[in-house]
Length: 103
Image 1 (cartoon, rainbow, N blue to C red):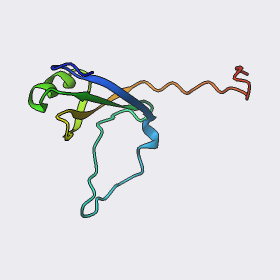
Image 2: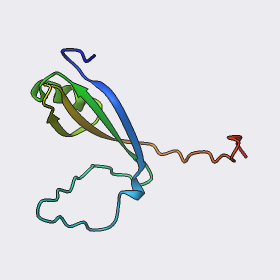
Image 3: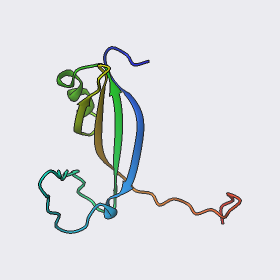
Image 4: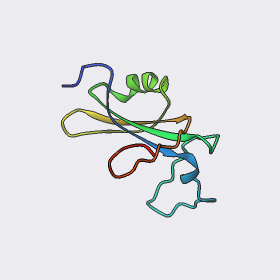
């Protein structure tokens, strides 16, 4: 259950920034391009998705403290989904063999 104010993080995704850079990107009609604001391509972009009942006008300043609010859309049930992007250090994952043991 969602609170009346604030937001609940429902999922996050972290992608190395070097995998987001493909040179110059050109939009097409009906296709939007987002600038994620990652400055160091050795870092990662963390995409965090939030659900809330709070209107965007009052929620966005709160989300801005955690990163860069990128989009907000309302659902038919009165709830909202927001995405916040922030730059985080990238630590490559440790590889494991099939048993899950580290090499």
